Image (cartoon, rainbow, N blue to C red; front, top):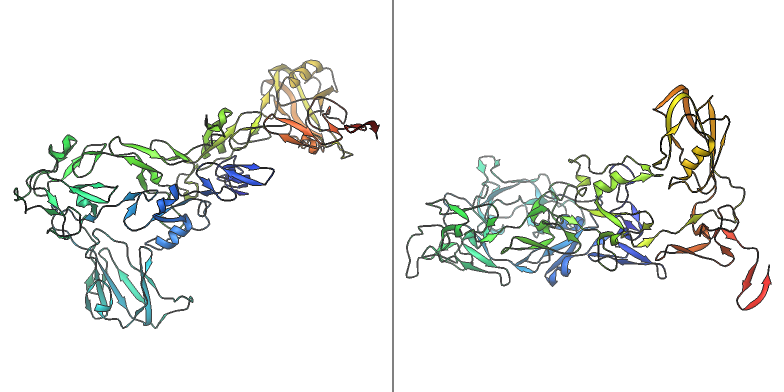
Length: 602
């Protein structure tokens, strides 16, 4: 059993209940093992498999583990249904992409922008003992409270007991350092004070932190990245073009295109926007001094030469606050690779959609059609709305409140709603007949009473969502019984009147269900078109206590054919213990013939 990826709702905003193979695999009855659909894994198919096993260049982590290891703000993701179910790749340094197959290019500052600053964070320690700093999931070694400036990595200045930590090679705004004052044994490592961190312009006393304002873009946004090699191809036009920098606009070894190439034959100041044709004809040049391209919709890169792919809510991302995730918009929803020449996403199974924003429905063994051609592929919100109880709308919703982070998947995850006669997570299985167990005794058919009194008009009777045509108020018993038996939801019924007409003189219609077993829902009486002389009512006189069990509990279902294979001594019944054509194994034969011995035995 695993948390259902999709299925019928069981209540308001409740759909991820424990089900067999998590509704993304089929159980092999001979072994009791789940055969998971493509893209799912685990003994119960409740885990989303990491794409391409992260190309052997990353770790496959759950959402919960990812948040615990890498959240720069310390946000956790625990107790949400997908915390342990959705897994993704956390790539090794230098690699990226949903499957870690891309080689990342060196990032850098755009050399044409001016007046920007490095990130500077402040740290003040007033306690005794030691502490640790955590940044982007990485934890420092214990730092003594008496540490000097040189003992703090990247610490450029210290005044009083306030240290200034400047980011000299990571550009742009940075998340704050997180302070940890407990040791590996979860015991306090500092006493008599605390450690305070300020960032993003916040102050400690007279000291002011600085929010990083430099760009941190692949190839400094002045070249194209070859993700097969992780190298930058710096723009040559307009001459003199760009080359690798030191991070500060000078020629260096970062490999980031962050310096004007003033060393070649065409050396001189940059005087135009990137591209042999400025901005490749797909954008507008801002002019001096920045000479940056503002790309037209659908185009991107420093020279607007690449097409953008559609974005969607990320399937695998760090939480934006505690237990809130899937809010960030990412290219191809972090579930596919973008082809920058076409602007099309190539989605990893089991995802689909222009932005890989949908979890696709199962296709069945032949992969010919969603839901095997025997059902409809619906989102979770649609599945909840279509959930029925005893054939009637259950009135459930899922994700009706768009601000509820727990139902983030209402329009993203899809599942199958099978046609009548079919079942299974992919609608490949046929439904077998049900029936009463013939060895249980003292059980009863359901009996209901419908009472109405009217002087004219018409009425309708309904059962499990099916309704008769309008019937006259004085319809005789045979007409009403025939109308009820024409409903697909009623398989056998006897009807008796206490008077001569259906709603004449306060008549009571007594309905005995002879082929529908178990605790049945009440018949529905639609009497709005009657000229009533007294209120109508529907009453259960005798609750149905017979079983309504698959193959009457005495056979197994051949789901390929939708027929019961009855156990020895049992055969198809008439629903009342005798032989018949229900196909339900509800008839217990008193005699059988042994194939190895033609003698009849009791």
